[in-house]
Length: 151
Ligand code: 4NP
Image (cartoon, rainbow, N blue to C red):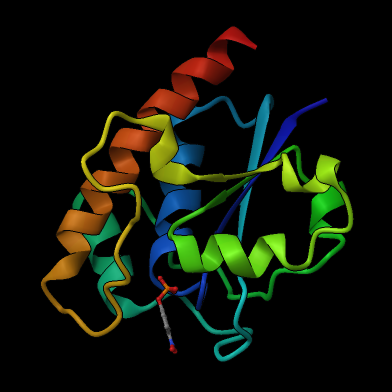
């Protein structure tokens, strides 16, 4: 049975779609299933932000087929690990958890790396932020993928 990993941000159009595409590109799809969702419902059904699609494409990660969905309480049962991009996402997801077991599945993505910053910044209002965000996520996903090879 594949390990199931969910990447979560606020809008599910900028950061978590990249995290989904990047991690999926580094793992065996037969062993690891990756999805993403947003805690906000503003963009349900939309494609990822064009700036995320562009930076992904630059590094051979195609996320253009993804469609935005909202995080649901059922995701706690569906997924083994839930990675959030920032502390606000963490608070939003934890607030929906029904018990400690569910809370324990939730982790900041950058907790996986020795990073100065623990949050992947929201690039929505910053055209220049996407490249930085890509590399932060990419570094963390390399560590996660290596860990999963050992599971
Ligand atoms: P994301 O960025 O959480 O990385 O997808 C955002 C996208 C849209 C909005 C906020 C953040 N928004 O307010 O519409």
